[in-house]
Image (tube, rainbow, N blue to C red):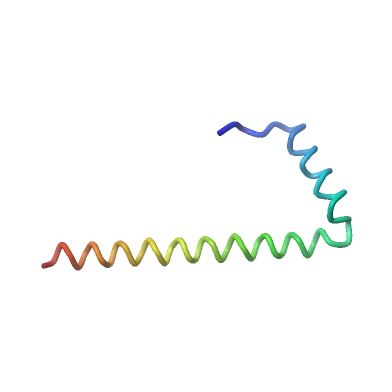
Amino acid sequence: MTKLGFWEIILILFVVLMVFGPNKLPEVGRSLGKGIREFKKASKEITDSIKDESCEVEQT
């Protein structure tokens, strides 16, 4: 995976600003943050579930 440079990030931010407009950006940011939090929570739950199952298998 390639790293994003300064100009690539500026270009992406400019495109996002043009697509959503300045009034929608806070809402888009909140939605994105909420989605990331939910994804991390689900990922942690799945990881914990797998660890619990593997511990149960090891004990038997």
